[in-house]
Image 1 (tube, rainbow, N blue to C red):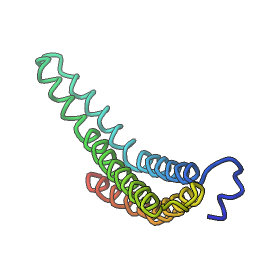
Image 2: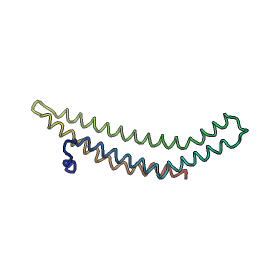
Image 3: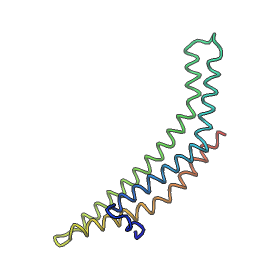
Image 4: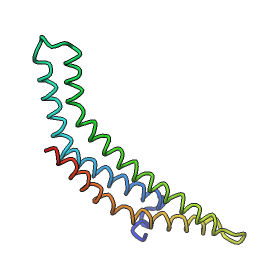
Length: 148
């Protein structure tokens, strides 16, 4: 927590949020560079070939193009699902910490002490869960590399 104290006027929770956002952005960019662009390139090339036969019925052309778009849609669904799970996990951690801080208050507890306890708890959970992001990235990359 001491590395956050140099940011005057910014709460620990805000810094934790920035840290998570930067890690997620980095993961998404990595997945895009290593996997999504390749899949997207294939999708456009294959979609172009769907339109080459001018005798094909429009419905068949559309079905062909939809078929070409399916792998990219699956990639987006996978990434979205994993990010939603991470977000849900962090939200549950925050609710747990909030409940814990509220339950520890009594008539003598000061608001500042409760806020500090909440920040310490959230910081610990975020620290613990940040290390899931590289694992999650490797898992998604291995799933996406199967189709190479």
